[in-house]
Amino acid sequence: MAQSNSVEIRICDAKPTMTRVERAVAEYVESHLDAVRGMSIKQLARNSRTSEASVLRFCKTLGYKGYRDFALSLSAALGSQAQSGAERRYTDIRPGDDLGTIIENVSFNNRRSIEETLTVLDRAEMERAVHMLCGASRVDWYGLGASGIVCADAQQKFMRINMRCQAFVDGHSIQTAAALLRPGDVAVLVSNSGTTNDLLDALELVHAAGAGSIALTRYSKSPLAAGVDVVLRISTPEVTFRSGAMGSRIAMLNLVDILFSGVASIQYEEIKEYLERTHDALQSRHRG
Image 1 (cartoon, rainbow, N blue to C red):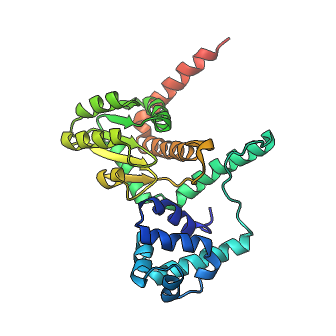
Image 2: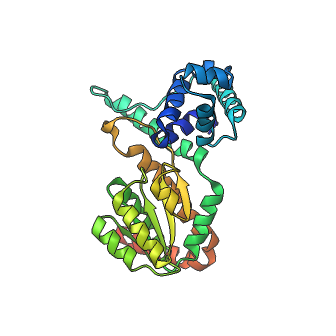
Image 3: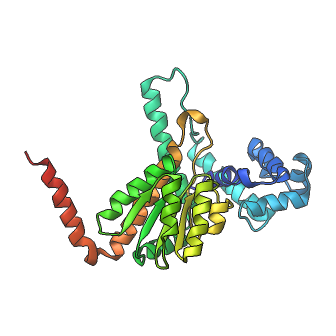
């Protein structure tokens, strides 16, 4: 995907953890993208009714080295957008939409969630996660609600290569499983917000057990992201309650596919027998 809206993605993902003043800068930038790229830091501070120090903190919160780095990135983003034409935006489910519109909008949103996740995904962190899973004695997947669906999908995939892997999708079972971990085990904690109390409690048990930890989450500054060994970030739109967790679930499922493929590639000679055996077992269920 072109990086044309990477600045907007960073702002969207960082806003929930921004200070009040940083958010004031963010909201001004979002509303005046074209004008901001030609402003000095002093002008942006004045127009957003903040200070130059606040603008600088805003830039660093987004991951930029300073205001110049932010301004150059914004200018490049808008230039790329101008060349490719106006970008289509995420669209939530709206009352009265016909089925054709729903098909187009939902499919578009899901594609964009995957594409935008690639702009925030740290490849080095993904490599670390793959190698952690390759060396794990046991892998637990913890998640509630829609995140639990992601965990169940991971269990189904990794079972095919004979990995000791299980999904836990309610608070009590998550706490119980985490309490039984040992050094050499890995827990993968799945949460869009990174603030789910059951997962944060479980993470304390993971640490106490000496096990490794990986998070699939949206926010890099969430309590969950701050406490794990490896963070795999997603990007998903801020839309209303109607569409629920569609975008985050699709983005996380894609990360699970990447993790599985990475592990299977490294261990292919060891696990190809299991892939063949599970394939044959499933195919036998379809014989007439």
